[in-house]
Image (cartoon, rainbow, N blue to C red):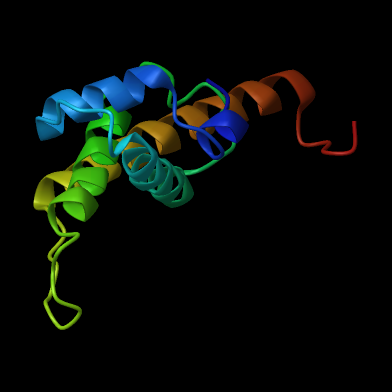
Length: 123
């Protein structure tokens, strides 16, 4: 799925995986779940990068980070406004793994570009 789609919609597979992860059996809250999932997708992509369009496709670390972040919102929705909500360390680990993979890919793509075009950025 393209980054523009990931930034604007939640596919049925992501919703299905979240419902399994969160042990949700009904469709009553699907709109709310999609809102949290979309927010999580946008957050993770924003933290990692938007240059490589297919980077997040079939990426288990992306799915894990999105599920963990969305579940944090789902699980703490009844928290008092004065309560502190702590980010799960698993989320940070998944995002850092994604950043490392993304950085390696962008360096590789930049190396390929310079191998083909040299230092002339204007063509």
